[in-house]
Length: 184
Picture 1: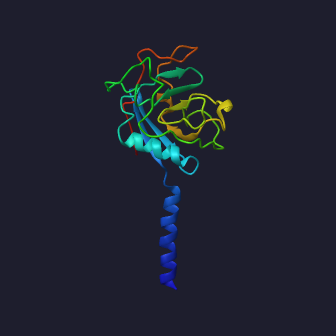
Picture 2: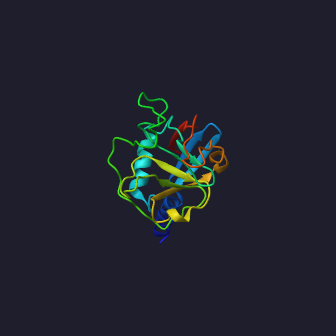
Picture 3: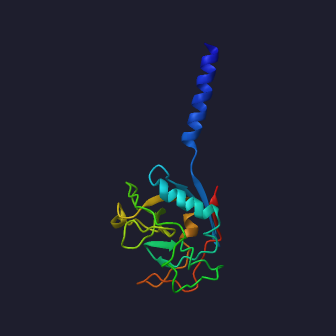
């Protein structure tokens, strides 16, 4: 009986550890480190793509090309928005993606509140690829229209410091960039 109880306790401890484990990323900005929790149970394909690009170094050097005060900061154009690439073109940043295929929408019940990460896309709901945005403030008009897949859980004060763009278009001259983005 003691052996059964021991096995049960070990199994329960391992399962409980799995439940408590979080899928975390560290986004390094000039202003400090931002910790992001991902939601693979809600948007598995978007999380998988985000982690693949991040851990492959594809987001390193990518600019925040569209930043609208009171709304969001958009980045992730690994083709035209990577300031270290020969393809870098600030006027085209926001029009490119990765070499991987576009993702089908994964609309969830996650509300677009302060700190939420969501996939940027064109008018086609199934056109998300590599770009994403972080909400500065709640944006309920985006709920169930964009694939939310994570949230800033530490360091939002550093996201708040990202240079804002034109009040109408959000276009940023001399934009901030991602120093690095990796799994924790």
